[in-house]
Length: 431
Image 1 (cartoon, helix red, strand yellow):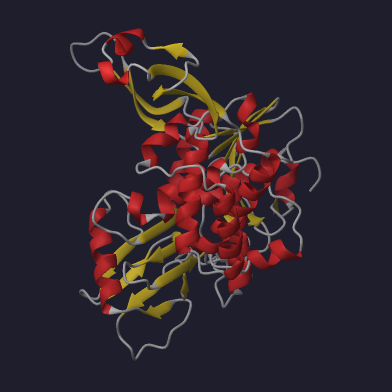
Image 2 (cartoon, one colour; image 1 turned 180 degrees about the horizontal axis):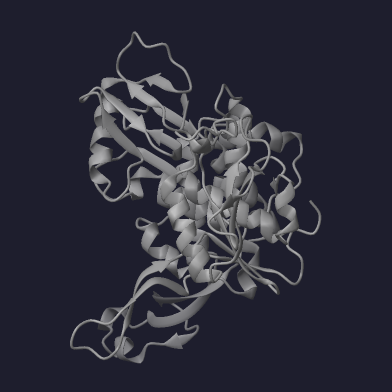
């Protein structure tokens, strides 16, 4: 297992000393990554540098496994200096669960051990744990219509087929009846994911549990094309027991099984953009801390940058939709909260560094402030907390009436670091 973090460099140069920021891979793996990169359009999880013998990872985390079996675990860059890989992996797991809308359970010693596993093995263990609880409780059966030829009549006689029965086989009856069977689409999808886990896992504990569950579900067939069947998964009151295992099943079938992926790249590519994970993580955390009279809305889209009336047309049209990450709606008005997965430095206040805050981000907030807050009030830029950014920066003023605060968010406590900004925001009851 090769372990790196965001923005790391992958090379085939054996003279390089491996670290979290640089790793040595085989020629075959680098060739596969180049082919994989060429197939991505509109996103750049991996970029090509130094000709053709070196690649640079982007702001994506997850797990890569080449067709030859070489595996690469990509962890989030949660600090500017050296960091503990177990801590970074635990934060990534918490973010992933928040993004998938899964409520964390109370951790016992066994679960804490699983959190130290590579990301894909951890996903396998979460799936197996939830599947074991479901199987122990009992799988949901359903009636399946069956047409067959039998010696006795049960159900409905298929009259037309019976009239066409050959003379020598008139003692057999064409019948149609229902069988109470576990072969419903949800159980077949779970069995398909379980088969993949059993063949792909390397953890002895995961393999033991997968093997046990495989025997208990031996009567349920697997699906050849499970991705098209995921849309047929029913979510209703009768299927509530399946809700906790469903996201893990979908993740395994859609991301971790190369047999079900489209194209010729048969390795595993499980990558998550850190910008989106961080946004979902902050949103999930703040939702639990909001006062009752406040509403946190994700990806508000009611405002546009421009209104334009084309020539020879009577009606005007809106152009360039504005979608802030989070919009806090209170009795005192709207407040824009924008998340940025970037490590800024509170000591770099010189004019040429500007703490590492992007000028484009401030232009974006300027537009949000005028459209969603009528050019007045307080807005917030939320960055991850780390050693060089432990407290909120002094406010930035677009004008005397429009102010921006840059506030650190602690990834471990899942709270915004308190400061002067708390006088102007109603983000949580107690800070």
